[in-house]
Length: 144
Image 1 (tube, helix red, strand yellow):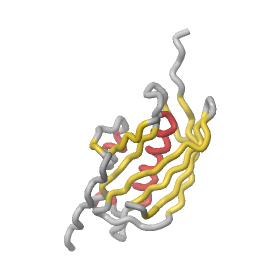
Image 2 (cartoon, helix red, strand yellow; image 1 turned 30 degrees about the vertical axis):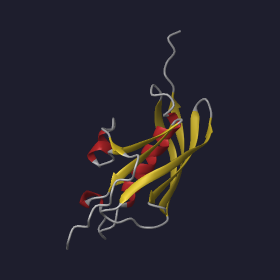
Image 3 (cartoon, helix red, strand yellow; image 1 turned 120 degrees about the vertical axis):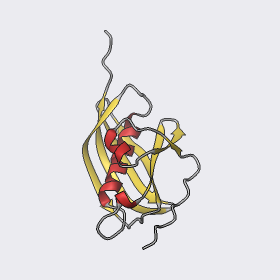
Image 4 (cartoon, one colour; image 1 turned 45 degrees about the vertical axis):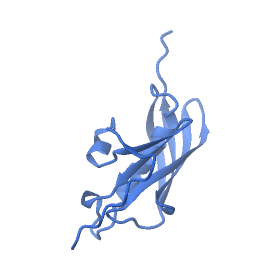
């Protein structure tokens, strides 16, 4: 079976080195800084992302959504950390090896301790997974 021709990387996405070793080892190496505290992540699906049927494994999409939910919950402050408390994922359609998957995220509500988030994982305009999550904000310690 021939390898699929990789999709082009969309405008705005650049390679970066993730802080998270899991994301780095799994190819989550594209980022698009949207400005105003928004960032999206991208992944060019290759053979290591395949499930037994040759499509992109759902765990890959969940990794992408988790990264985007956490990044967008605290992107406005690089000193703030983030940990997922809860995530709900719904698979809407499949994605294929060779396709470029990206996220589209938004903050629903942010409190002093938590961010309530939404995220779609998409291929072009096709939604392949929707996700919502509650993210614990790990605020920097004050010097006082």
